[in-house]
Amino acid sequence: MNANTLLEAYEPFELYETEIEDGCTALIYEPVENEAYALVTDIDGTLPMDLEQEIIFAAYTADGAFAWSVGFENSHQFLELLNNHPKSDNLVDIVKSYRDSGEYY
Image (cartoon, rainbow, N blue to C red):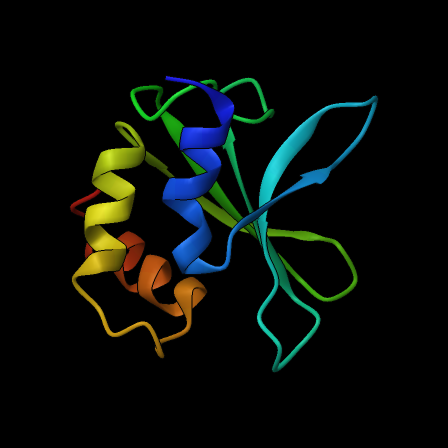
């Protein structure tokens, strides 16, 4: 498994690699309707190395303040959640509903 495979798995959900700080990268989701965004990282706060690593989905406000986060056992669990919803749904709303359900990893 390489980084390209990871990036390809996330691309259909409009998550793309971005530089965050100190030369590190993460996956970013930026919905068009507002300036809030979300990052998907491994537990160290950087781009996961593969689909098997534990990941964190962290939502941020339009001014860049941390809002909330939720962990996933791995990318497969996260992508399965997204695949269970129409692509037109806001990804942040999908993950927030999952987090609010209390059934997360």
